[in-house]
Length: 224
Length: 253
Image (cartoon, rainbow over all chains, first blue to last red; front, side, top):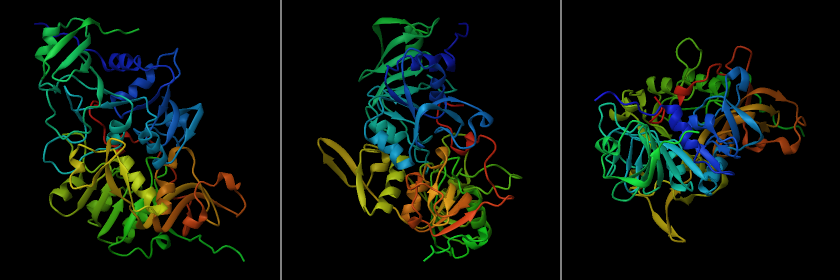
């Protein structure tokens, strides 16, 4: 079988951002989720929040352009919108815990069919981990979207019946964007809503660690 | 009567009374990192320190930059405990000095979700001994913590944190110690300033009293014990974006 083309990270970010609705407040996690800020739907007003206190930041910029004082949660320089405000860290998390985030987009190592996900520890039993703001966002945002590669480098699945790694939060994932398509946790398995061009549902099912059902409205990944 | 003079002459003087066993909160999230105070602490070298901050990557920049990171304090075996939101690399192929010391039993690392960490510090400064949060319910971090239900939702009890010292970086100060932060350098700094017995501030300028409109003051001088203006040969800004200071989340190669 010839190597089939998976979705690029830009495509994944564009498709995820297309889910954002007008008026939403969104928090974009470090790494791939941050790329959604480059693909915000032009016809909708979306406010970006970051854990270090920015409300209303814009695109990434160089230090020369953004100055040395303003960074996003990935510690990368960003520009501020005209309507921006800056809070201290405890208030920034008050925004999160207070339920003001319409969506949190996070990376993950594993997502389970029941909506659990794991993203703070790379191995069971290893001391410590890197939680950052992910647990607060996962517990308190109105909905959690995950962006991740569908499989590990060795091909093992990352969409699973249940998480093997310690979870970040339970039952919170609403949508999973991978390089093979767009998925919903459906309890015992996953439902595929949109599929990468050139892949079949059977191809994707073979790379998924839980039962996979096709949505009645299954279509190719929609990129405007 | 004039305000008590809080301005100290050197970074060495600013940290001179920090003894073995002290607990220190260190502000910063990229901007707002008190690089010069961290460096002075490294040079003074008290031992058995407890450090409370976001990540051990703070202040990192590599050799030749003149900067000292929390990892350097760990390498020098000055630290016995950390309370942080990142205690291990989220990159499977990387192992940090903190992970090595934790595995060897030389450093105790308390891992705290970032919002819980911020609120524990805020509570410490605000005289609230504990609070309830939904964060981390159902995870490994909930083990051994009091669970309580409010309005049908489960919460964990988290206790406040205070410290002997806070290291704060502000944009401008006045001689009373009122502080103003620029951009996102605010982050943990204002809450840490309230939660420590002695707050030491490095700033770009110390202005005469009356230079701020009261509404522009982000941290009141009542929380500030020592002020030092960053000298021309000090570390003013980190000139390169240091994305590696905060470990990358999965999915971001």
